[in-house]
Image (tube, rainbow, N blue to C red; front, side, top):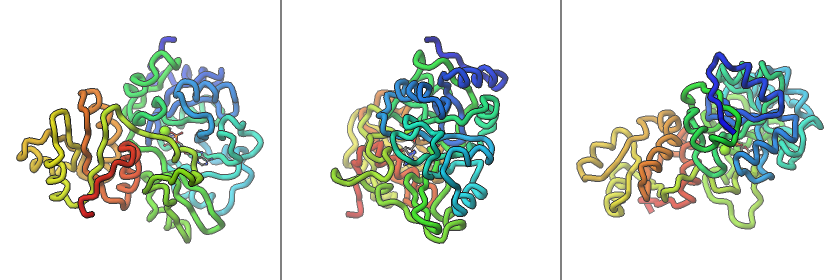
Length: 340
Ligand code: TXA
Ligand code: MG
């Protein structure tokens, strides 16, 4: 199969493929998705096959208009409605009990479904042109860093999918915040993202960050979200995450540094690494910048052939929580705490 690259003028071609049950790479403001008709089990099976994704890991369903939400779920409780009104279109996925319209293939066998309304104008145009809800996991091979431009999608899926719609670079760069509702007043964060716990607490009385967001699940622990079980976001190089103050992280990395290593650090700390002759690149000077760059940096450092990537850990507040959550998984939980 030859993978076509569609421009914004060719949205209708991509939409026609989706209506035929084919799957297409699509831009969103978070990461690129691999879209297919969420209501068609055959289309959904194609998504799982192209990614090599475990069948029990459910897909997020994307809509472009509020009226398209109700048919997908049993009911929309007031708290869910309030969250959607505040954060949609945008990087928030809301999990609710699913309606019979959602096939078990889409929900990974669960009786719930996560729905989100992306903010990227080309995603909205594509969903409207297709006229169907679109199931879309991140458009990477299962386990590797999520794609934040059309080129990344080609790197992973060229020849496996008929097309990718090119919408430029993703603004957020990490996947949506995924939430479930524990009760009428309580939001549980299953995956952090650009919508932060603090922002959620402007709408919900109580916001719980699920413990699995910040630590590895114990082998006997049930995953509240299937995605928590799997190795994720990992390049070929070994990733080590180093926590602590800038000075402590620098001296730790200096003590571990060897041929074939590279350090991924905050912009403002870059000169100190250069001074110690440590190969280092920056991944930005704010949590938002680091979110936008992290996956693309991991991909390019990997392609440059580094054996180990030593990463300065962000703090775990604001959007930093989301970056940290992705990095502990990329590191396979190899986290060195210099304060311990
Ligand atoms: O930003 C995003 O959410 C991107 C773009 C393409 O929209 N999509 C994305 O999908 O990240 P994916 O499949 O790579 O990640 C979805 C995560 C998985 O960890 C999955 O386990 C969890 O959300 N999830 C989806 N539906 C769920 C459900 N019903 N219950 C619990 N977790 C769910
Ligand atoms: Mg993913």
